[in-house]
Amino acid sequence: MNCREIQNLLQAYGDRELGVMTSLEVEKHLQTCPQCKQALENQTVLGKAIAAGAPYYKAPASLRDSIIASARQAEQPRIIRCRWQWNPLAAGLAMAASLVLGFFLATQFQQHSARDLVVGEIVASHVRSLLATHLMDVVSTDKHTVKPWFDGKIDFAPPVNDLAASGYPLIGGRLDYIGGRTVAVLIYQKKKHFINLFIWPAASGGETPQTTVKNGFNIVNWNHAGMAFWAVSDVSPEDLRTFAGLLESDTSPAR
Amino acid sequence: MNENEPTQFEQAILPHLDAAYNLARWLTGNDQDARDVVQEASLRALKFFGGFRGGNSRAWFLTIVRNTFYNWLGKNRPHEVSTAGDEELLAMEDPAVNPELLIERSANVEAVRGAIEQLPVEFREIVVLRELEDCSYKEIADVAGVPIGTVMSRLARARKQLQEILTDKSEPGGRP
Image (cartoon, rainbow over all chains, first blue to last red; front, side):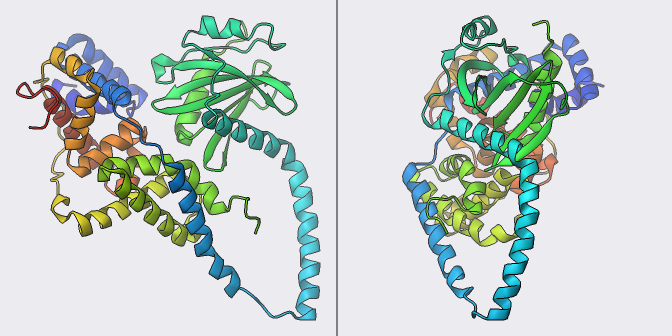
């Protein structure tokens, strides 16, 4: 590829939007072309400056409250309009139907309840960690600081990896309580968003990552090398799966 | 209905309220107008919630926020509604900007904010979605309702403008 073609791809390369093969071609070109290298460098400088300098405006609490209030008010009239005539036959049928439905739901719920419970707890913990500003007990981007911090606080050694090179820097760790046990939580950042990664010992199996959405948060969980990993964040499902993939390829039992 | 229990609508929307407000705040340029836009967008989202088929609720809500903003813009500041030409995918071209100067000026938080505020809205929204919201090109294309190629060309031009504003020698970080 010539310089002109590469220049059309540089931005997407810097934004990690190119496929592996094209990225390799761009990288090959960058090694020999100082001009393209400088253009990419300028984009990186700008991106970092925006991430560091531009304010992220959080929604004021009063706006949140007023949206909830007006949404509930708007939903009110619909509920009233739905009133129906009480009729013994319909009531009997409805009761029979709800019994059948109830039985069906009960069996369904039993299968999923354990997982749903964990998902619920993890999302709650994620939200709490961001709200109460109790995101981290140990603040460090150095895995050699974060990993020893867990020593003596929990009865297992979570693998700690920094993925800064791939756009997911490690920023710290904390302890949390999920499913009746103390677990390790590593906090990663993706631009201005946080990813909480919960880790605890688990039986083998379930290595294929599973994606779940709850309350608008994305959750990906998988097992690897005797540990259960649950990542939760408001980043897109694709980004979270990429993150999981990076961790998995980086996590060997030896570390 | 239990008063304290979040409805399905609230569960889908509230996690993305910060993203919505941040976008509206950057686009309108002030708190009160941003609140109005997000409030209005939430009511529209509620109206259309029945048609939401699940999936990316952030992109869905941000699309509504963006559309609400453009309606608001047409009513309140019609002169700002511009039609940016999206002819060709603009390459980053030769690095005409002075790299040392760019690094130096980029450290100035006020200059960076001022530079983004100077961008035309259709560039500003893409910069906010990409650099602050970390949306993929595909998500930005969905939210802005334009092809991915247009997203890339606008992003390239926005970045070029930002670099130019930041390295403008006459007035460091200030308005031209």
